[in-house]
Image (cartoon, one colour):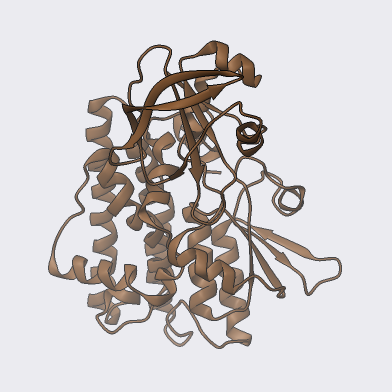
Length: 375
């Protein structure tokens, strides 16, 4: 059985032309063969099993030889993608499609828009502003910038891009085609910024003269600010790459080593937080009544994905302890952070291809596979 993406085929047109008989299916589900239904191929009616709800949308089920199973993907807010799963080469030929095993990397995981609370936030930021955030709905590098915009209360517009069909507007801002990217519309012509850490520094400077909010300790405490930068350096250099090495590892021994590396990175981060607690009274949300800070924002997207993606695909349980649990809960439940979070299904679907280390998953995945620094 080979899943095949056919983005160029309009399934509704095929249905009206009696080439297909289809049913609407929520994307959160997976379907197996069990009871009969009719599927129309040309003028010939054939009997085939009816797709029945199983449990999740993240595993392919075996389908008997010659059986055609049509899945009509209905994204919650953007019903445009279709997947055809079939062992019938004749029928695929009828559609003008070719079986491509590489297409497996996109099956049930091609999200173009945020979902859940994050979708609502996108809709609330649909009008033109001085800043346009070019975003990918499941990208953690985007999320850290998005959380900062929310926390710093800087007006912005969101432009969600298709991660596999990058628009020219994005390429003009970010030559590698990577998100996040900012378009600064108050310049003529507009100017651009990319790289999440650079953007965060820019937003911090911008807020200091506009909204008067900050992600760092006050300027009057340069040592505390330096400690936050040490925390941030560890997150970027160690924790983030460890996340991807763990998720992309395929050999069991490599997965065990990757899990240890990721947990060690968390333990070291906690050590940084505890040092700041001893020396300056704490920073960010590590303090029970602290404010969302730079290190929280830098680490948060990957820790969120550790609670769902790494748990689902690698069986990871994060370390437990009163202080760590309290910090993580304050972070994941912070209003500015929650406003940028999609549903769990989006993350599980989107990271399936990382978990199986599919070819050409992303520039980040390629860098991990080749031992290079993250782009």
